[in-house]
Length: 111
Image 1 (cartoon, rainbow, N blue to C red):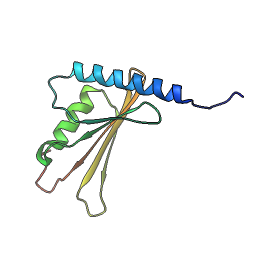
Image 2: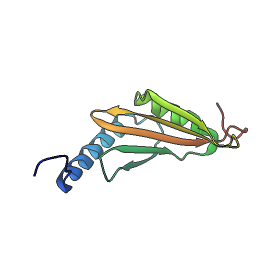
Image 3: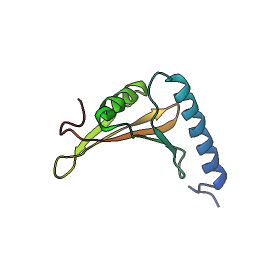
Image 4: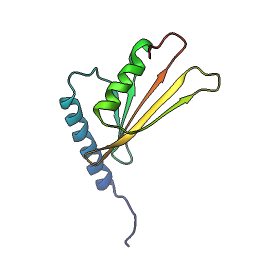
């Protein structure tokens, strides 16, 4: 049977490719503080989350976004305006990459 079936071997290969890309990203950006990274289970994508102290999250998000040249970015305020959710995504060497951060613009986070 042919079709769009994704095998376990395909998932494993994609995860390995994503892990290799993460290693390359980290090696190329030693000057930027680290963030939490996840290699996704289903498609071999990378997901980064900025968990730095609140006062530096927006800045660190911006550093990683610029370093990875992630052009698609959104900023979504919560219903009450605090917090604000940041999300950027793109592709690095064929691997889908996204980064997120939750910031508090009520004086806790510097813009």
